[in-house]
Length: 149
Image (cartoon, rainbow, N blue to C red):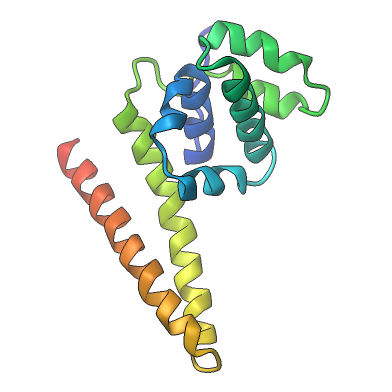
């Protein structure tokens, strides 16, 4: 039976990493941290994949799908995500779009939290400007990607 496409940006991004582990090397350190911080089952799968990638280098999905089953800490939900197929024929641009969707949500939440702290913490305003600038870059990339579709 054909596998269905996942519904969330997190599922798609993690599944694309299983299909294209080399994408990991094209992300920034901040994006690595973002993906590691995702709630279970995504964050633990990202951590597993990074460990595997650093020990063995990029490996094909068929090898990874068998290797992930040997980790007793990953439950059935994580294994289902690792086994899924995000989008047949997906490219790095597709992966980038999903990471940007996750970034968009995270940066929005950060800007709101920093605004709330800005009155009492002068450093929060400086940090808000940095985060807002990054958020604007992500929104511009998402907008450009939508225009291309």
